[in-house]
Amino acid sequence: MYRIVNPLLKNIIHRSLFDATSRKQCLQYLKTLRTLQLNGYNTIFLGETDISESLITGEKVPCEDSLSWPIWSIVHAGNSQGWVPWRYRVFLRDDLPLDQQEDVFQEFCDFLSITYGKCAIVVKERKLSRAKMQESSQQLEITEPQSISLPSLLTINCCPETAKATGHELLSVPFPYSYLHPMDAAWSSLKWFIINNRKEFSLISLERTYSYQCILFSDLIGKGIEKMNPNKWKVAVSKVRRWENYYLDKFS
Image 1: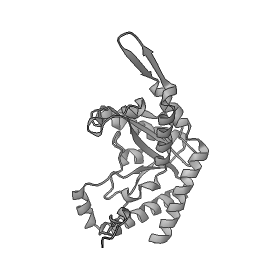
Image 2: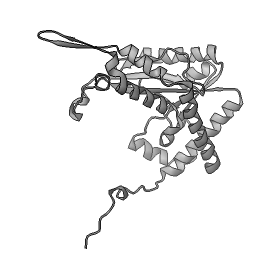
Image 3: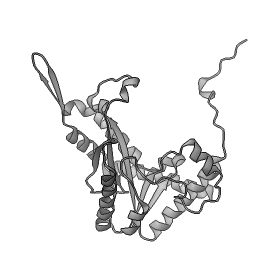
Image 4: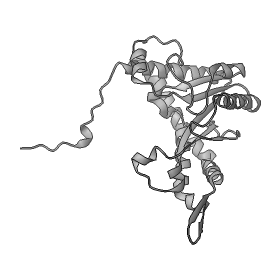
């Protein structure tokens, strides 16, 4: 007699040596963040997301062809009240010179100093390669949250020295706990707006031989960002705050 197995139960999650390391990273990140907040630092969440051209146009592209389509990266930041009043950036992936990558972060830090004073700039840690994970698993004693973290975005270079020089501190959320970064909720809101409203920002011209589609890309992105209003931000940040309190209590 054959037994029917629920396919959801086939994937068993095994605890590994990385659990202890990641928990310690998370705890030290949270303690550092809380200390900075108590010392008057404003928490600023800096993040980026990728927008494929097919998402903008609405065309269905096979998986094997999707890699050849242009990818746009949007960089922006928010705090507990909403988007920071900084002019967000839209870059064509892998098309930004290295010197300009550093200039963008320097400009961002200078803007924060003028607008908010000293800030704790929080980014998401990039996923470690297998070799890096094996190396980090041997480092159970971690002195700083950034010791094995990669506090940088793919589009711009986030330099801790640049942040310190302007009175800020740069922190990274450990990769296994990336949901402690509320920017994901903002990017989700933006992409849903694009999917549901892209036709309203599209102009189609039909001629005898050719047809043209003009998409008001800047207007589409700008309106989508505006849809992440202060109320939505408060919900996202409150959710992150509850998780932070939970882990501080659990891992301490």
